[in-house]
Image 1 (cartoon, rainbow, N blue to C red):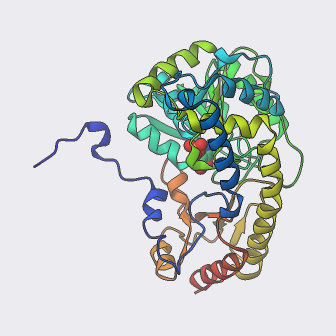
Image 2 (tube, rainbow, N blue to C red):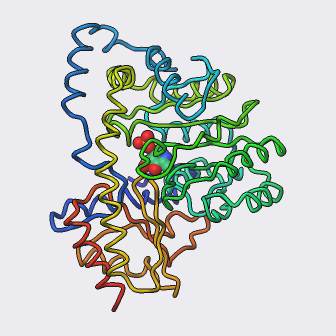
Image 3 (tube, protein in one colour):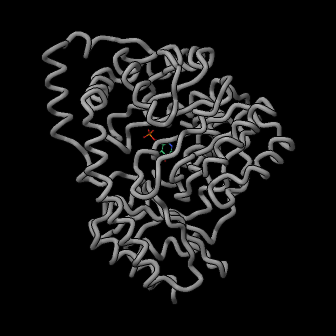
Length: 391
Ligand SMILES: Cc1ncc(COP(=O)(O)O)c(C=O)c1O
């Protein structure tokens, strides 16, 4: 049969990373694509233990329908946890548990945006945000990242020019660049949001994965009257398949998002929420992060050293203080996009940078993930890359 798909999905192609996943089943492939936590950081034993305890202690609560806004003990514990990033003075009415941070972004777009609306994003930005924007037929416009991830002058200029519905920012160890906003930049973003009355989404899945430098307060911590919506997730700090994240926002926003969430998945899985609650309230989340950090630090250092040793001189890269990504750029214009197929044929995968740019530019850039490959694979994979790019 000929299907007549809705206009909003007719011209959509899959998210580039999901597409890459399809070729990764090849055992020989070394993947610097994806953004997966290291396999050895996934806390299977604790998840098993907490799930067993919870199902024994309160089987009905765990398996029955629950509140769309989230499992109450988790909303309370999560709100205590985000005091770490200076988010204080909020009640459970300001908290919505989401099925991963990505759902929080999706619900924000659904709550605020009409077809054709503009949203501002870092150039480059998290590619799933571009993908979500397309499903709502929005127009994402990029602003410059500058040194630390947000060029505040360009942000202000683009707000004046485009009057966006929302601004989307990743403050820490950004996906894809690995950049982290300076303290002054965080404060300035709030000033700009207040001046132009625009809502900023602060998407912070990586903030706790810091293995160098000092933790910084969130953008939200400087927000006085509801201009910033903070989204975080336990995908990188516990396990992505649990699909548990948090949104903190003005309660009027939370109410609208909850109505939208009800229509999508009714609620986030209670057992997963309760397991996450136990990780937070027992301090196990922080012990797990503390165990993971040296692993990520080591892998990042191995990749950085290998890039410096093997890649051509025209290749420059960021040096992240945390998170899972290094961003590379060929200053001579070499196209990472054009070489991608050859890289796959040579059993190494990365994400071509253009997928992260709202305007599709950035052919000469690439995102490299170092968390999921072993140290040996990182070394071998970078050698394979260098063989392709030094030809
Ligand atoms: C910047 C950013 N935001 C959100 C997400 C989505 O995370 P979650 O698994 O919580 O949906 C990711 C995942 O890679 C990400 O990199």
